[in-house]
Image 1 (cartoon, protein in one colour):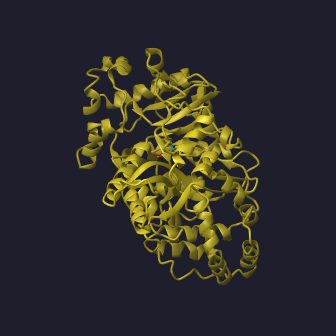
Image 2 (tube, helix red, strand yellow):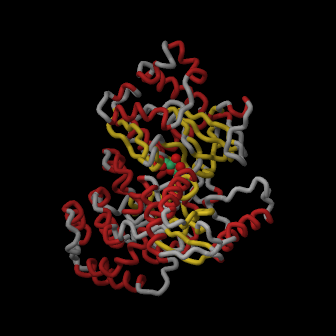
Image 3 (cartoon, protein in one colour):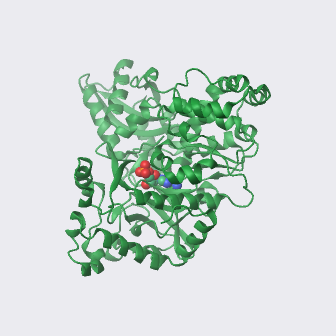
Length: 567
Ligand code: AMP
């Protein structure tokens, strides 16, 4: 695919692709199979060209664990043609985890072109006529592959106020400082403020709250702070800062030097038309906080994308986060859909329901898990996301993102499953066993009332051989917080180290609190005989019940702030 298309031609291509969704999908499958039929992986299932017709009956539907051995072999230096014909140029780290480590997904140069097309489509959709000045600010350092590409350099970089050197700077604090500085200097040209996910944008704004005085001082004097040591950043900023600009510094100081930062974005960047940050799925929890900072600016979730492939774009960017649907792009991969039973997340146990459905045959109103066959070596791979079909654009289906399968706690990029939390609590429970203490019942919640957000575990404890409330040494429960954190995934720990997630908290509740919780759910219609303590609480009344039983709050002392980045 030619990466040098214009926005208009990208939209025209998209329209053609969605009209011809069925044929496009057949071509995509044909191309993937022709290219990869002789790989070690596919040749186990498809022996000859004629077997291609039997793709759906012979190639199994898989999860990451099934293909992990192949990816591991590639990571260890074997030629990548064991899995795919295109040369693997990178293994991208997904935020999903496998045995606590990030999943590695093969990436190729040709995939970069496909991603460029997806990215261009997203820009096309939001750059509707009222948004004419192509400029903006955002940090997406995790998209390094794309930022380092020729496509980004030639076609996209001029759309950002951040010079490429500040985006690619490996020191995230220096990178963020410099990007804010550029955004402030160019404040009158900015039409969109954003970041890849809502949670990250909030962290960026918090950073600005801490650094606006210093940023203003740099603008006033035209001198960059000495602690910015990255040469790329210093060179880039020397072009941006130019002469001392006391008027601009005064204006920004007046705006920032107020008690409440409500609506600050529109005040600092008066030309902003929209906020560019994904706020669907687990990010929905950040909407109220973003609305506080951003006032009535529309929050635009542009695309549904992953390390595996780009999947869909939001063609109605001004829709509210809860009404946002993504239209699948038929040439990005071969898409199939596993029907999901709405209540149980399980596929119903009959043939009709467990059979995968083609892209053009999904039924609006139904829930599905996407299964992708990509150009980069994933064949009938379950994505682990749950989507709800909402309609069609031409012949391409549209979906709302419902949630990640099995994930129930998430603050930043990390995703913790019920099993992972259960295992972590088990480890801590073993530790307090030596003090004759046991966790009788537990549940988890996310607290984003302060930034960064953090996990809260509610624990009801019992002392062996005693019906009294156990005497607790704060140090012991703090150690438990640390043990839980150590047992959580690599991505959690990375997030925690980078201060994307705050210290885990254990709130010890008094005896009987979990009975009260059960009473509450039963009063709401849960069956007593089938009741299971939910391991994640979002329900406000349930949180109130738990909080009213709290007798002690303890925080993890792991990953001391001094060793973490301060934003
Ligand atoms: P990663 O594995 O790090 O590439 O992240 C991809 C995952 O992020 C997807 O499988 C989804 O679970 C989530 N995701 C991506 N785009 C969206 C979106 N627009 N709304 C909600 N979740 C999303």
